[in-house]
Amino acid sequence: MATYIKSVTFDCADALVVGRFWAAALGGELEEDSTSDKSFVEAPGWGGPNLWFQRVPESKTTKLRMHFDLRAPDGVAAEVKRLEALGATVADNQREDDQREDDQGELVVMRDPEGNEFCVEL
Image (cartoon, rainbow, N blue to C red; front, side, top):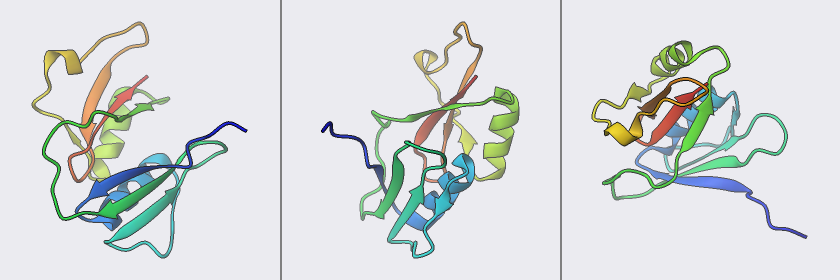
């Protein structure tokens, strides 16, 4: 039997804040036992990995080497606005290679409430 991804884990300062954000952003369910020390978001739909958030003492210091690329079926601008209302911000110090145009349309680099980068694209 092949191995599969059970969950993706994020270190953070407040697991509840970040867990709430990602549950709302992705339409997932935040486990009711979630606290500032640990939270768990069950991925919506079938087959996606769940998200685990755990409090750690150190803060984020560099750009993430792995991140989410979110598809925006209703358009990038509308999704960026929705995510900003949930607490995300548009990355304002993007390097040119972080911004790209492709055959599908634009891509916007954003950050969750603790500064973890992710992309929004068509």
